[in-house]
Image 1 (spheres, rainbow, N blue to C red):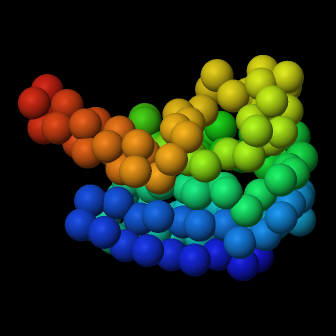
Image 2 (image 1 turned 60 degrees about the vertical axis):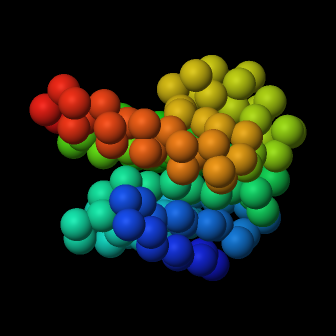
Length: 123
């Protein structure tokens, strides 16, 4: 699976460079996610601008990543979904389980706001 990683002070941006996320890529996706959360920077932004298709299993993996992140007081935000993929996720009733923003900049804002909330409320 082709990805680009960009590490900032408070988060990693994982940009998927594949047009489709399929079941056989799920293990690579999880490994990339887990590797990014093994250091001091645990918040993740996943940019899916290049992705036009995914299967249900991969979408469920993203939902699980979302849930695990919040259980561990980390942020996980998906950004830049193509309209067709966003509509498909909505039709599968999975979109509402994800923290999705239209742009990477908005995803960065969400992560920073959640960081402030965790600091204010003691995680």
